[in-house]
Image (cartoon, rainbow, N blue to C red):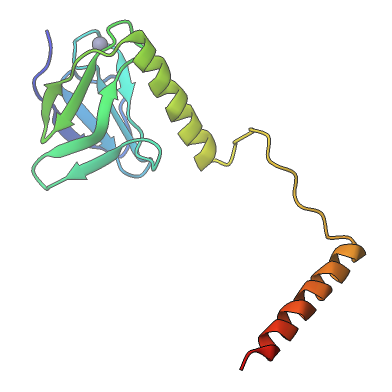
Length: 149
Ligand SMILES: [Zn+2]
């Protein structure tokens, strides 16, 4: 049965056995974990990280951003957690999931500086001839400026 809400539980460590309907928050390790809201029993990690999830706690309830898409699970559940409530989102197509995974991987790679895409070669120091042409160009510019009233 699909859950309609979660109860946040702030813990020092995420317990091995998770209770359904609880959302465990371990601030020290920036870990947030819960059992999939569809009831399939999959443990879902939503790590707090600039490239992961953001947790908002208003003192009474919690919200997670962005949505939780359990694309690696068979259920493919997709939902939001807003003010302890679960808002079910439409299922995504296989193509959209693949795109999302790709853009997420790119985001992670960029964050951790692991972008292996070929970089343009660094410009070499200009040859002496280039300094000469630069000096000539600057000379022409200076003469032109000095001619002005
Ligand atoms: Zn599930």
